[in-house]
Image 1 (cartoon, rainbow, N blue to C red):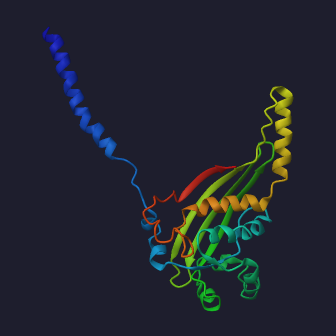
Image 2 (image 1 turned 90 degrees about the vertical axis):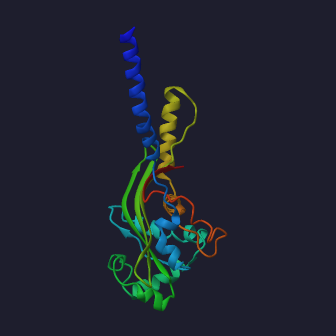
Image 3 (image 1 turned 30 degrees about the vertical axis):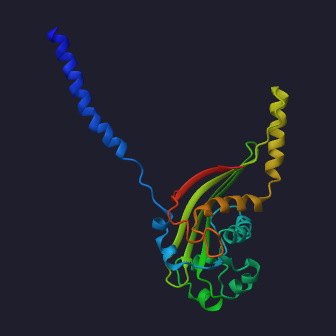
Length: 236
């Protein structure tokens, strides 16, 4: 009997000691970071106008630069910013030798403020562009960097890998059905609108960007939980 009581007492003591530890673990939850904290400089400067810089392409896919340059305009406008149309700024970039944005990504941006009146410049660095036709996947890794033309500060930064899934399911079943799916997926991926793929990637990456002055969400999204600075996602 005494042995049984001793075991019970020991078990109760162990349980009582584990409860504070368990409670402590519950408190060690992931810290919630709001947009106003992560993008504090952006809320402070409140840029209204953005110039899109030609993308920096670090892949072997030479056309990726042109794809992305044409996909930035709409997502930024949708976020509530006035964006200088890329085609109208192209001549200036060529005149200022700015088509190679590498020389500006860490340099002075005062020229774009003085000539265009832009509050900020958006840079994109394409780090990976891979297509797997059989699997119906297009994987793109891009870094997005918004810098102030006034202070040179980084206002918004996000980098991630987006996999665009173009796989086709015919639901035919059986061996022939699987072969039909494979053929359909290969054709679908090969014919993918590359600009649409770039637009989906950009829209996802900029979804965390604070709303601009021309958005109905302007000034109200500061307490929204900020997304991951480095992310990975699959979109259809």
